[in-house]
Image 1 (cartoon, one colour):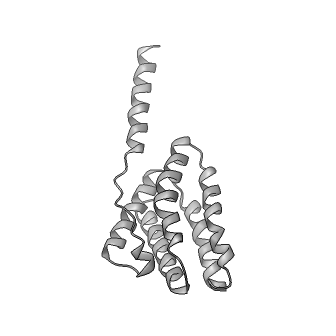
Image 2: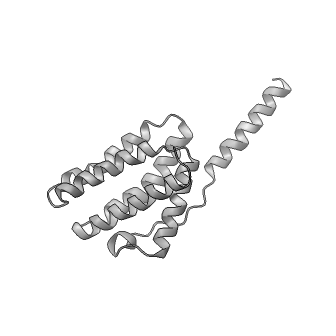
Length: 148
């Protein structure tokens, strides 16, 4: 292997390892159960920034948000099945990401540590509304941090 190839591989490994390091506080289900507070806003800010840094596009998040808003329009009580089916739709969204490290991040950090616990906390119209506002805040901060 040439020196240039070795340099490129070290650079790539360093870049890839940095992609695996995230400093995201722990998600708290109380934000869905009780509603927003300052810690939730800070969490959404950080999550939006991390999603942007991991090259998760706005359109990928807007697809999820669009489905959330469709359920809200029709009413959570009428669309409970559609809400439950958000989990597989989000998993499918993650499987369509281009790079393996993105898929790994999306599954291990976004789906398993944030999205699934958030949806698990939704039990009625009120908690659904809190969930919708939470996701809206993540989307807003994602765009604020410069996501495409």
